Length: 202
Image (cartoon, rainbow, N blue to C red):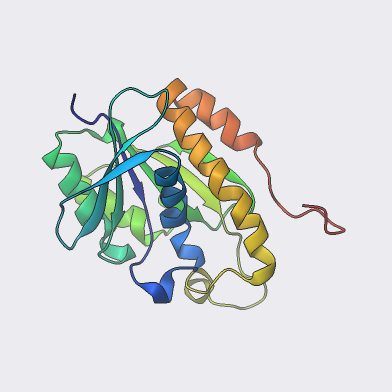
């Protein structure tokens, strides 16, 4: 049975970027891969591609981490879609989202690209914005900090506790999407919150 879904997590390759906010998508698909049984597929230098089996979900899922840097992510995504004869309806993209606070996430289909270079590249290479996204909040920088510096900075030590709560929840939202569809996953992801509470309660 051929794979029926491609889940692409966005980020930048290399240890320098490993813990940055812009790599939240990479971190989330790593958490998904760890929740099932994965085998690496051959893809060349443009991406890391795995075939993933998850308990309770029929068939294999493709999980992709483009290795081209964020602004060329679409190249690897489009290649995998073509090679496996998948459509835009079969694609889920997991990415960091400035317009949501850290600790929140949302799933949706279609919509704007919000200035996100990875999403722009995917839309450009595939000719469509009509794909499912799992948006992982990173919040906006305070004061006058440049957005590009913000997304390419590591999560602060005080943020990492929240990140560690988001990752398994993101993997769970993706599994729910595969099992029960978009509406259920939108509802579940929208209700999730690991945002720090005033007074230090997580």
